[in-house]
Length: 84
Image 1 (cartoon, helix red, strand yellow):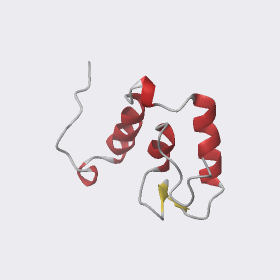
Image 2 (cartoon, rainbow, N blue to C red):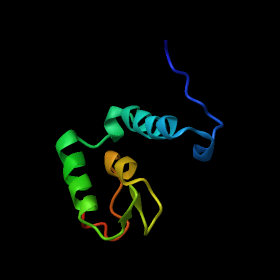
Image 3 (cartoon, rainbow, N blue to C red):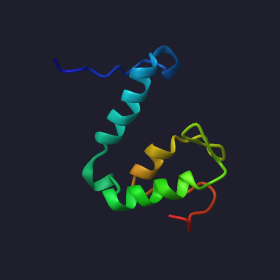
Image 4 (cartoon, rainbow, N blue to C red):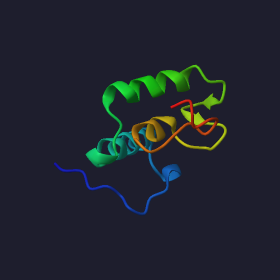
């Protein structure tokens, strides 16, 4: 059965499973020309996991989900654009 994404839900209204699924589904559906190559994505996430500003998967500086931000090729670290 195909899952239809909710376009008007807030994350607080989703179950924990649906919440995480919606984030990863968003990452999977980033257009290829906007998506970071896998090796670079993993490198970016490695840098995030060593950063003191990472709190529960979110950047304490800008509020983004780091896994989403790292997945977009034109995004950069909120702390310093040179990091990525």
